[in-house]
Length: 360
Image 1 (cartoon, helix red, strand yellow):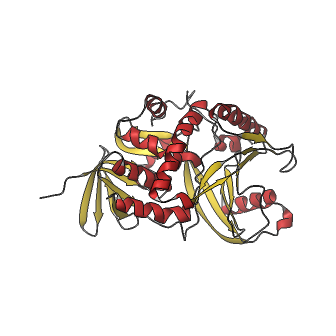
Image 2 (tube, helix red, strand yellow):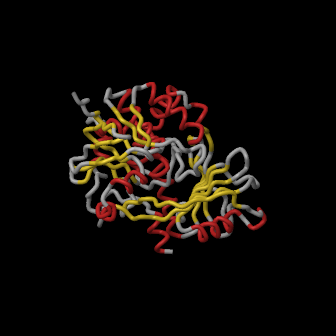
Image 3 (cartoon, helix red, strand yellow):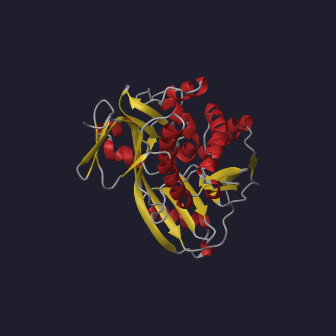
C-alpha cells in the first residue's frame, strides 16, 4: 500500500523556504516535505535577510509591519534568537533615479513605525545620498540554518537533500521526489527561492515572468569598519554586510570583474582590499519590480520570487496564503501579485534596480 501524498513539498534552501515549511507543518497542521540543502556555513550567501527593504509601496510596508513581530516571536520559539541581530542599516544611491526611489521609500515607510533618518549630504561620498533605518532585524544565515533544521525535524517535516533527490513537478503542480529509488509525493509544490525556480520551472515560463540578473558574491579579507554593518546601494542592486571578523561580503549585480571594480570604488582606495573568495549566480527579478507569489494561471507549482531581503519576514503571511487562511489585507496583497498579471502599466509596480541600471 503506497503512502498518501504529503500536502506540500517546499523546495529551497533559504530561511524563507525553511520558515514556510515549518509554519505549514507546525501552525497549519499540514504534512510537509522540505527539499533543500544546508550550506550556509561553507558557501558564500546569495542574498541577505533584513526586516526592511527598498520598497516604495505603502501596502508593502503595511504587510511587513504586521509580519515582522510575528516572525520575531516564531524565531525565538524555534531557538533562533541568538541568530538574529538588531542593527541600523544604511540605504544609499548615486543616481537621480535611485535617489528619487529612496525618497519614495522614506515617505511610504513613515506611516508604519519605521524610524528613518537622512544622512548628512555627501556623508558617504560626493554626489551620494543615504538614509539610516533604525532598529532593523538581520538574520545571520550561518547561525540560523542549523537552528531551523532542528526545528523542522522537531515538527515532523520530512527532509530530502536537494542535491541528491530527483524532483519531478507535474503540470497540475504536484511533485514526485525520488531519493535512491524511494519515491515520495506531494499534492502541491512550492518553489521557494530563485535556485529552485530556475531548476524546476520551464525556461519559457521563467522568461515570461522574470528578468534574469547575473550576480556576484565577493568576500574580502578583514578591513576597516563600514559606515554600518549592513549597507544597500539600491540603484546598483548591491548589498554589503560586515561580520565581527571584519571581512565584508558584497553581493552585487553583474559579472565578477565589474562587481569587484565597483566595490573597490565604493569602499575606497585606502582600504587596500584583498579578495578572500567569490562566486557567481543568477537571480530573478519580476519585470515590474514587485514580488511574484502563487501559481501561473492557477496551475503548476507555487512560486515565491522577487520578495527581496524582506522575504523571510513575510513567512507567516505566506503560509496563511497557501492554506487559504490569509487575512483580508494579505489576500488582497498576494492576489495582486500573482504570476501572469499584466506587467505593462502594472498596478503593483515597485522600484526595480535593473531598470535603474539600464537607465544609467
